Length: 609
Image (cartoon, rainbow, N blue to C red):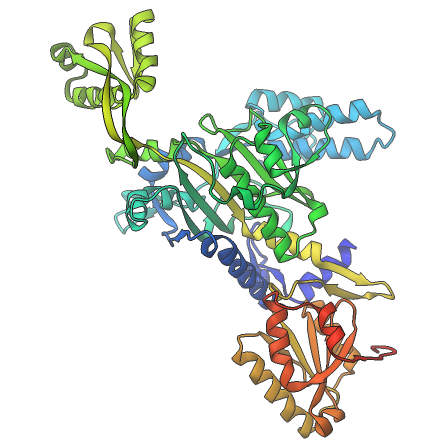
């Protein structure tokens, strides 16, 4: 029930529009108290599941980024979405989303459409954000997409999504609010490697806000202009992308939507992680390992496994340097939404930052025994180089010498010079007479390499919203009673403490129990209002409190209280001295409600009115 869900989210102040009394701003939202607690608990689970369990190196980098960094990474030139405008009003729209919506409307409006025709439309929809401007314009025309004014949209063109600013009062230093957190980790690679005692492989992680000037924000927290990200950069030898802990997840089954299936049957397949790697569906062990760990994280925080899948990027979607990319998509009322990207970015990031700054971004593999490797021995015509490249001749010769350290790297250059008489190295065109070479071997005791990067990137806001949808339900007996089915580990408040009546004696016990829970860092909700006990339970259910302790007149006699579990509404009676330990064990996964009901007597309750 989307209407009831939206009403609850706003009424209980999970999420509210930013600057609401001033009219609000599209794409900006504030998290209220329940969502703040939920996000904090979710991030805490994420840190424990990834950063602590994998011994990752966590950083907190600045949100302001100098232009030179993002120019080097390619964001200044290529971090774009295609935009179209209404030629009458000038209103802007994201072109690929217009196409996706048009296809949705076509399919929904034609329920009897033949399966083959429907699948053809869906294949085009999947490729919407991979079309070139010309291709996208053709598709918008084909599907009859028109502007609100009734006119045809103008031609689509790229719009850079970064927020530009200046650093310092002079206004001469251009900067941007970071569109992702990853670049801060890449530029710190050498220090991170040193902090890890030069050991490879290793991972660095960061949680923080990113900023994107979305063309047409919509869908609540799913497309916003400021958002929390959790990113992991796992640095690995490009010649060995195995993972030492892969066996621990090899049997885990995932729902995969490979590129061949997207363009073919349109159906997903369920397969174990081990089989996905051995059959080549997923490129390597490390990428597959993090996909499995992400699935386990989602299940741990309470996401519905039936509404999770991994979709592989189409060839037209992937960056030119990427080896393989899979998005964890979560199904919500808005359809399948990308929430976690898993990308094998190869050596691109460290390469470009290293070359731009003349900083070696390399790691070292120590060999147990000396090894002979093939290299190219170069001889330069310095006069020719100097005449052609002048001040850049050292840059050119240095680039060639770097490639010559490994014959496999230099061979394409040698082949081009022999075949075409010229070759391009780092943007410089060299000709055959500038350098001669000889293929030879040398004995080495260590091998230096630029690490590849496997990157899981988590959109925490999208995960948070999806979790809210997955946890929402209404009681069978009463649709007016809405419940958030948060797991104890992520629930904003772990326990409610409620008096049967508002007498001073009962309230004193309430305060005692609440203080004991807080001593164990268990967020607690105390409701001493004069409303009925059933109404107090309902209030706690709406914000996802998993357990409720009720202090009644029996408590004053024998020191026992009742403990109610939210989803079953079953209650047990137990000594108040046992409550804190039990709630703590529930939150940390050390005990279950099913086991506890075997140890303590269940209380008969006819109604919760």
